Image 1: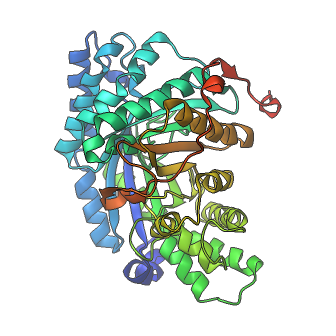
Image 2: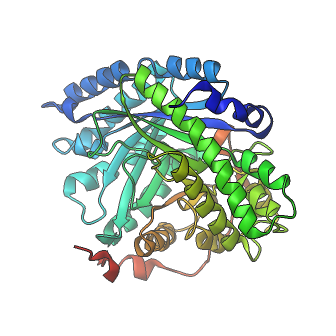
Amino acid sequence: MFTKKDVLETIAMVEEEHLDIRTITMGISLLSCIRDSAEETALSVYNLVCRKAENIVKTASDLSREYGIPIVNKRVSVTPVSLLTASFPEKAPLIGKALDDAACTLGIDFLGGYSALVHKGMAEYERIFINTIPEVLASTKRLCASVNVGSTKSGINMEAVKLMGEIFKRVAELTKEEDSLGAAKLVAFCNAVEDNPFMAGAFHGVGEADTVINVGVSGPGVVKHALEQNPYADLTEAAEIIKRTAFKITRAGQLVAKEAAKRLQAQFGIVDLSLAPTPAVGDSVAAILEELGLEVVGGHGTTVALAMLNDAVKKGGIMASSRVGGLSGAFIPVSEDIGMIRAAEAGKISLDKLEAMTSVCSVGLDMIAVPGDTPATTISAILADEAAIGMINNKTTAVRIIPAIGKKVGDQVNFGGLLGRAPVMPVHNSDSSRFILRGGNIPAPIHSFKN
């Protein structure tokens, strides 16, 4: 039985080490909102989201005050919108506007689920829907979009990968006056999960209950502080320290998640224990890796240090809760981690090294700015490489890449807040277009056949 006493030991973590509940995300099924027309569906979607989530901001504020743990973001995820708009895909932007309006009415930070799942094939209505993403992201403020282009079971849909390279470029162009901010609200996935509470890739899976509360807990500063108290620990002992720290963080997260679900009359879903950094000093995954002994993140040894960190975090979380899910592990977004920002600015970490690191961390290439003149086929090739890591290793991988229109290597994009800032990083100038334009599907790996 969890009580308030269970989180008393976290008070110092909150006050000194940046421990927080990064997000409470309510997942809402919208399948009951489908009507004969786009206009009727949009109205039904708006009304349902506003009704289901009307108390999420107040509940988060109440819990934060009662338990003394900051709850940074209040979010909603919904059924992939392409499933609602199959009969009128060209009018899908009406649903996107309704969702963004609902997010503004509720006062939440982001709403995820303007999404499509095309990992094995892409129906014509899905192609039309995906082509609406740039317009929708450019005309909304809080809506996020995602597309799943591959899975271990089905392989990689290279037609969807090709299209998504073009989509990233178009949304970047449409939002170039805001440093191509629209691309920061778009994710391409392989092995997307149905219970992810983190944006921009959150959506409410069709296998989920009607209304669910998923909580994302974060504490890079807490883990770094624990390691600082044990500077002479060997790596076996360091892994144990990380595991014990993750246990404490997860326990606090589960307490908040269960109480939030009860008050919001929703099912408790999962606790996502992801070390999600922010641009604030002391809240960095890169700093943890450097505390372990690396001179700078990106140097040799970075991948194995990240692998150890990610594994220890998962083990500690599983010990603390039987409902750990989502993406759980360590995020490495360049623009959202002050240590990653500094390493990228100094040229100490490259896109290639980040790709290698994604084979052992929670997600993938996240919040990376590249030159605005990068060809769409090169972006598609980057997506395909990352999808291959996810497919072969049976893990979730994703790409959130920002082709910064009008900017070149060494320039900066600045989004502010949690999205932070990032230097524009170089990409290889070799031509991948002939490979990408082949299209088709890359077959699933041999170890996918488990029936």
